Length: 134
Image (cartoon, helix red, strand yellow):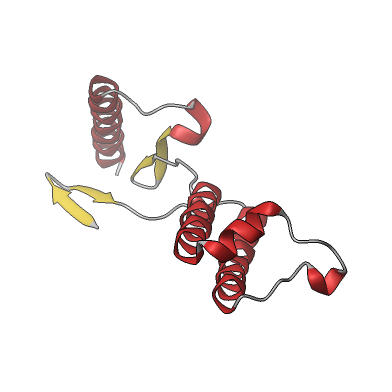
């Protein structure tokens, strides 16, 4: 998404999480489908390892629709948490002016206006100085 207003360009983009979190989320995505498939076909994966199936597996076999929905939504919740960085980074003319990752919070509207105003004034001041020296 891009917005233009008074020569200010605003872009929104995804900020990727750490590679480890991305890999765990990808693994969970595939594992979720495997578990749902096992629930649907009624295969007991614990028997392959010579283990007795836990009670929750037995419950899932008796309540396949609920079990599949639980696995799906619980896994999606964890995947989304792993992929979320909470980033809100602001740059002006390729210069970082705010970072939620560093500050730990979003700027208030007053802070944001003040930051942008200061940066714009500094840019205008720098531009007038370079034109005078040219």
